[in-house]
Amino acid sequence: MIGLVWHNASWLPLFGGLLGVAGVVFILGWRLRRNQRSLLPGVFANTRSIRPLFTFLGSFLVGIAILDPRWSSETIELPFRGRNVVVLLDASRSMRCQDAAPDRLQVAKTLLGELAESAVGDRFGLIAFAGTPVPKCPPTADPRAFRRALRQIDPQRMPIGGSLPGDALREAAAFLSEDREDSLVLLVSDGDDMGSWPVEAARGLGVPVVTISLGDAEQGARIPDDEGGWVVYDDSEVWSVRDDKQLIEMSQATGGIHVPLGTSVVNARALWRQRLAPLVGGSESVQEITKDRPEWRWFAVPGVLLLGLGAVGRPRIA
Image 1 (cartoon, rainbow, N blue to C red):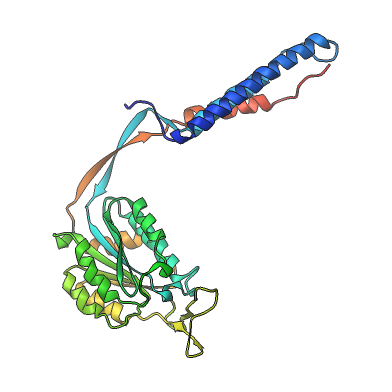
Image 2 (image 1 turned 135 degrees about the vertical axis):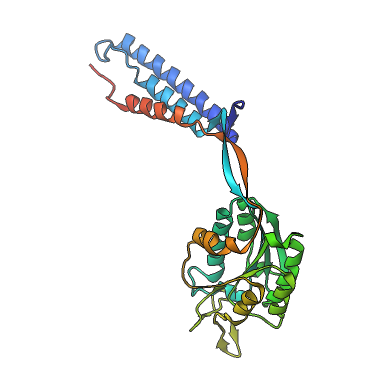
């Protein structure tokens, strides 16, 4: 048991103000009807209606439900391994290509966020890279923090353009735990590299490197510029075609796997459980999590019923 907690406590001042206004309106309406019956008894029916009271009480209870009161707790058990997953996300201009809808980068963000949600108890860290690696989120078991870091990644905000995955792999060493058996590096890219020796860098980490490639491998797509057009070089539009060669070499050299996602959609939960999680060790245990139990239904259900009763019928006029 816990004390009373208002989960949406920030709405309390607004609720109090609306409750006060509703109380004033209810009292004024009651006095108006009383005066009408006393002044014109032949016009207004003398029967009393409790519909306004139903409406007031129903609104009050629904308001309490919206504030989400919680006074009890529950404990759930979750499987826990404590794996350490370092994500390297390509944030170069070519990741804005729209051969994967809406573009390669947004597809990657969605997939990575769902992977973090699926890996309960595991820690996800994030490094964005283009011409230089930029750490965005240290390893955390909070998928919401990881998703916030993902949303902040934008090719326009990267300090240096280009694509150097090898530098990002060398930067990932700082995010890895001492027990490398519990660690995994996940590199998401369209395969571009400007001579950063990524295969050698991947071997030096001593952990499995999983590579996920995005984009079309046949025709590719034009690279958008910052003005709504297309990147042009030597009077020709620049096209980016997915290149799996080095990504496959990285995964094979480290005991990882390569996932050629291309322009398709994948079930992130199944990908994590069936293909990625088995690559990493971690000691099996159970983690107990205690959380507040929502109690809003006790107020919402009678509140809606009272609002329905208050809406039945119309005011009687003789």
